[in-house]
Image (spheres, rainbow, N blue to C red):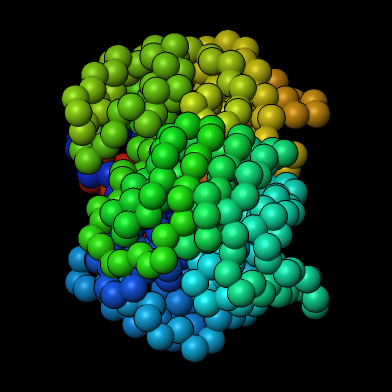
Length: 420
């Protein structure tokens, strides 16, 4: 087993390069199933979730290779096992994204109900209702979704709740459906846009990309293509918060500033000087302690729930009071108890964390409880006095590519340690 050990107290300084977006590459790899011929996916991050998705496709019969720079070449012309077993996908919620592609291209799918981070109820009922509206016959037995359809048919479908993976699954399924599909109340996250752009390169006919209403005219066949994954806005945001919390100054290359507008606004409110170009973001705190900022999470383009935990840590050492309101997931304050163990003054009341900033945190043993909670603990370790240990770091490896190497490039004292 491994843990991360951090000696805190050093301001981050220097330059790093953002990785490809985890939340874009997973649906795009799954969407490759609908193409005929070979697709080349570039700027793919080396993450445990990506490895799991690749293994899942290989088990189905997909021809998939990964080169030395982690570019992924995919040909799904001869899938012989349209099944996503629990043993493979139990740690990864994105496994549900195999359902739409398998069903629309091969007419059948058997997908385990997904696992992933325990941050609250994330039901798949919208996925299933949407596919049923397209004509699929679906039943759930023994923890598996079993779906069949001769050919999906276009429909008009309103999603009762904004859902990223639901939008993605139905969007992919509609590309090969007969007729026109109109999806309403769609998620508009940049990762959804990246998926739609990939499908368009494959020959899909999609209107309204980036809006809450997407119209898809089904086609008979899609073809493989080459696609470059967008930068990971959550990784970028995490490093920006880490620099701000430590009073540092960093530049992140291969970024996409327009995808981080709400986060940048809050960092400026916290006292950071931020400058951007088309593909870089620079932050300088000039050694200052951050100001407290109130946070309200909501679907894009509002403040992302995936950045809430990181800002809790920033506020924990800010100069004053703040309130962080989590509107999307009911169990997404599990990192708070770990921060309190490090000396944070935080009270949770319902879906709000009321934070009184302290001058410093103290190093302590901590345990990650989900992907973004693990990032908040890394930031806490960077600002804490003394040494911090983080256990259950498999959560970190699901979503952050070589996080300790990048932080070391910025002057942090952080290492991965094996233990028994």
